[in-house]
Length: 111
Length: 113
Image (cartoon, each protein chain N blue to C red):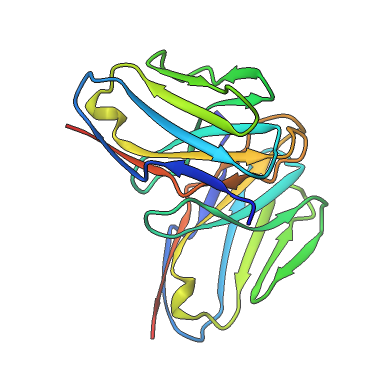
């Protein structure tokens, strides 16, 4: 089935550091979403991207829809302990089709 | 605040004993989804309702059923839970199928003894 390759699988960083993670596919997507999930909770939508090349920010988070439409990136600047969680990318290939999720990037932040 | 609510947050059932999980939403969204999420894995879509139209994923076992009696509520029925069905079950909504921003509830953690 269709897969999204999300990397890195996990990250261990110091408070204040910047973080980058990405999601790639062999197929074209028309929508990319980024979610954060904390332990025992449901995923929370962070950023939605709808156009190739689009760059969108949400506070310290910035996400980009790759020009090739086969990838997306999420950056977190000046990380803080509450950034800890699992970050999932999700993509939709065509309108009306199901979201496809990446396997997640687990972020740990030490203070 | 508009939201997606799941009850209960934790459910324990016995092997083979039917169980029902519930989801309600105050967003007035047309689409409601049920996902299964096992530890350290991505959410896996089981099925979704677009209004009253039920859409099952091809690999969802028959053991899983769903009901949507009205716009606000959706239920997940597991007819005969097995040990492998222990997981977090997530409900999500979206305004319609073409607008894919999905909003998730907090989930129900199911334990099967």
